[in-house]
Length: 161
Image (cartoon, rainbow, N blue to C red):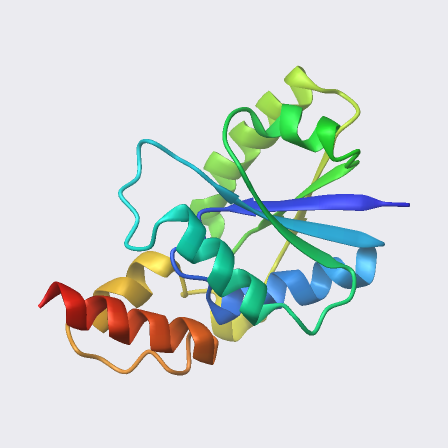
């Protein structure tokens, strides 16, 4: 069985993330979306909230699992018997960082491959930071996130007011 890990912060999950997932589920027998706990980031949604939003957004996929992790990604991948990491590349600006991470992960575990997938062109500008900022400023983000994430964003931002 070919298992891939799709790691990320997913704060919140976007339609771009789901587009990458659509591509990954066609390539792998099982895809594990895992919500990273990154102490250097201050997410809008805590790890449990992001986990819950992702589960709701991907429930139609029978070969997708949602999980959380803390620590080294390569160690998590070993524990899950994964052979690949899935990463989305939107633009050249993503490439340098993603290449460094892929090479470091290869150095830590030479059996783990990184697979770069490009989203549909309509998502090349989209990221969670932009979505959060537009939502904070009262803009319409309904075309950028699944409904479950949209509702959560509205609730979360109304509480902060």
